[in-house]
Structures are given as C-alpha cells and as structure tokens.
Length: 137
Image 1 (cartoon, helix red, strand yellow):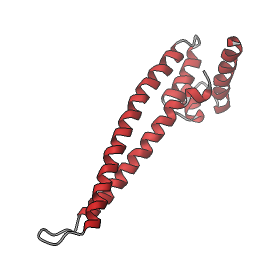
Image 2 (image 1 turned 45 degrees about the horizontal axis):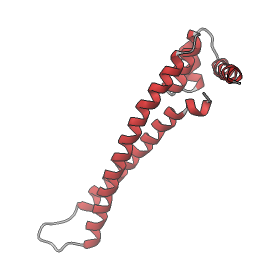
Image 3 (image 1 turned 90 degrees about the vertical axis):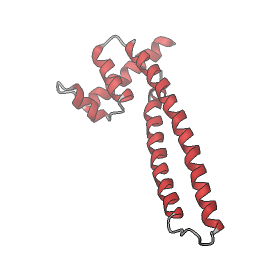
C-alpha cells in the first residue's frame, strides 16, 4: 500500500468538513433570502428562485456528504485490516494514529511517547512501506 492510499481517509474527512462548512453558508444564505418577506405583499420572483436554488444545493450537498461518509466507513475498515496485519505493535500504533486518527507526525510522536520524535515516527512509517514495496517485487 502506498502513502497516498493510506491517506485517503484523511482526505475524505477533510472534504466532508469543507462540505459541512458549505452547508452552513448555504443555510445562512437561504435564511437571509427568505427573511424580510411580509405576508400579503407581492413576491419578488428573484428572491424565491434564489431560495429554491439554495435549497436544491443543500439537498445535493447532503447526499454528497452521506456518500462520502459511507466511503469513509469502507476506507477505515480497509485501513484497519491493513494495519492489523503489521507485526510490530509500535508500527501499528504509528499507522493507526497517523492514517486512521489523522494526527500530524508531531502528534503521533507525542502519543507514542518514550522520547519518540517527529522524524522517528515518520521514518518508522516510510521504512515499513519501503520494506513492504520491496517484498512485493
């Protein structure tokens, strides 16, 4: 497995956070568009079409987020199966903290403890992947 493949869960989670921020923005726009209308007053067709567009975008984006969350579940399961096959406990911990929990290398080093540095845990990962790729050839 490559580092790019290992990082897919992290990137999916970031995409979901971006999409969730977009939903908040759309909700705010939809609410501001619909506010200020008095009953019995003539309707402004452009306001209604903006509101309809925002609602449609919200629905579409909600479906997209739901699909990405499903992909996250599958990706997490795939990662956990891969990591579970790593023989060394510390290496499994490094991979779990980095690729499943999405921690930075510095956070991983602090969590591992025992004087582990950022470069040490990064090297543990890269050396393991290099060894795995060499064994595949």
